[in-house]
Structure formats: C-alpha cells, structure tokens
Amino acid sequence: MRTTTAWQSTGNSTALQRVPLERRDLREDDLAVRVDFCGVCHSDLHAIHGIVGKPTDGLVPGHEFTGTVTEAGAAVTGFTPGDRVAVGTLVDSCGACPMCRIGQENFCYERAVSTYGGADRIDGTVTKGGYSREYVVRETFAYRLPDGLDPAAAAPLMCAGITVWEPLRSAGVGPGRRVAVAGLGGLGHLGVKLAVALGAEVTVLTRTPDKAADARALGATDVVITTDEAQLKQAFGRFDLILDTIAAPHDFSPLLALLAFEGTLSVLGAPLEAPVRLMDLVFGRKKLTSSGVGGRKHTAELLAFAAEHGITADIELVPSSRVEEALTRLEKGDVRYRFVLDLSDLD
Image (tube, rainbow, N blue to C red; front, top):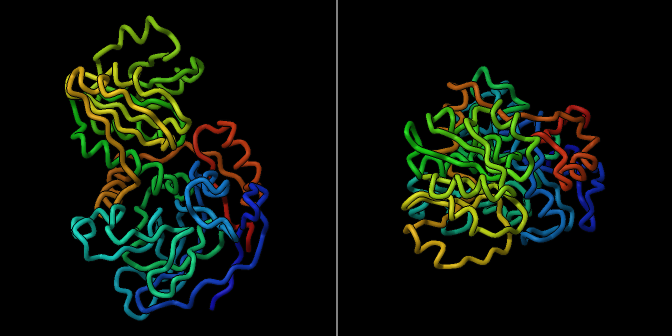
C-alpha cells in the first residue's frame, strides 16, 4: 500500500481532519497522480451531510482535480511521469454495457465507480477522493490536461464544466439558439461561458440584481431578474434551452413558462425533490430533462474545446487547510464562483 495525506470528514462534519490515507499499490493500468488542485463542489456538501447515499464513515471528498503523474503501471501507454492530467467524478465502469460502449460511462448499467464514496470494482474498497495529495486511478479515466489551461482554474471543468457541457451538446446549441442559465454559481457561470463560446445568445436568470454585471462580463447579452414579474412576462416563451443550475428546491413552473415551443428545461443543480405540473409541459410541448456529469467521450471533447476557447472557471484558490472555511462559505453561497483547494500544503 502507498501512504499519502488527506482531509477526512467524520460524523457529517465540515470540520475535516488531516489524516494519513492508504492508496492501493499500482495495478498494471494505473497512474499515481500528485493532486495539485481540487475543486470544492456542492455535491461534496451533500455527501458530507449524508444525503446522497455515499458512505460517510471516513469520507474523503473531492471529484474534480488536476495534478501530475508521478508513476505509471506496467501496461500504461498514454501517460508518463511528469504529464499534467485531470480527473473527474468517475474512476471506473464496466466498459461493456451499451452506455459504456457509446462513451457514456456516467450512465453505466453496472453503475460507474465514483471518485469518492464508490466501491472499487476489483477489491470492493470504498474510494477516497481528491482532497488528498495523491490519487491512484485507471489510465482510461485520466485525461491529459491541455497546454495553456491553468491547472487550478481548469479543475472545476471536470465536474461543473462537464455537467453543463453534455446538455448543451445534446440540445445542439450553436449560433441562432437562445439559451438561458438559471443560477449564476459554480455550474451556472461555466454554462454561460460555454454557451457563449458555442455561439448562442445567452441570458442569465437570477434573483440577485447585483449579479447582472458579472453575467454580462461572462458574455451574457441579457439578464432577467426572476423576482420581477414584468421582466418574467417580457421573457415568456423566449428560450430554446434553459440550464437550471439551482441547487435548492424550487418551482419549475416559472422557468417552463419561459421556454419556446418544444423548448427544453435541463435540471442540473440536483434539487432533491421537485414536483412538476404536467400542464406546464403540455402547453408548448416542452421537455423536462436532466443530466449527470459526463462520459469519457464528452469530457475529452470539453477539455479540447475549453483549451481552444480559453475557458476555465472563475475561482477562489485557497490552501487546503482552509477547507472548512470553503465548505462553510459554499453552503452560504458566498463564492464567485468555485473554490479550489491548493493541496501543496499537505506535503
């Protein structure tokens, strides 16, 4: 076994403890990755609080990170020590089911192995995440980090970025399409950047007027304040696609009313309970859909697109020793727009 250092939650607490952590010895197709930067995702909070079904005993969160290969297994062909890599929310899948065969390992029929809180397909051990100085991962679930992308600001692409990228691609977003992004947080701000780069006309839907300047700086051409009935009325039937990145439970009806004929509301913020009124879908033959992160094909595509267009997350970089502060502020919505931990202080 290999020993590294990690930040671990005990008793559903965001007061994570610095602990020694054992990683497996490298299998033939494994990489050892020195984790340099790891994003702090809202789903990390859900996991810590025990509301998404992951084991909480000894939980080490973190599933969007970048780092450097330090060692490669005997059968590895795509990476060598010193390569910059990125790792996302999945670290294994069956590789044989219909979803895996089309590059949608995130929907693996045998259940993909999550980066933390999953069960290793070979030895059954619980996976521990990227709030650690080293991670051991199968070569096929590591991605080469393109030159030119800042490794700290690129880390959130591996969860927040791919979460909005797949529905944008599925909806065929491009020039002439009208996209709205509801919620301007970790997911939402990347949704704006990516939709703009794809050529869409982008509007931000927000309750917070003071985010209007940020929205336009990110490339949005318009902002609709959702607490203003006059603005909502003016935006009725306007959008082809709405990316709903709001994490808290909320009513979908006002958003569905903003969709054009056969428009799509893609719910990505994972509000755990959300009733839907069928007539809101019937009027205008609208579509309600969702998505969960992404598979290998679209993740590689996203990284290439981000490098081509210079897209990374807007981040607040903090030493990993301030992880409790980051989680506490994230819970309050006090970040623009993604915390990223610098793991070098675990040396």
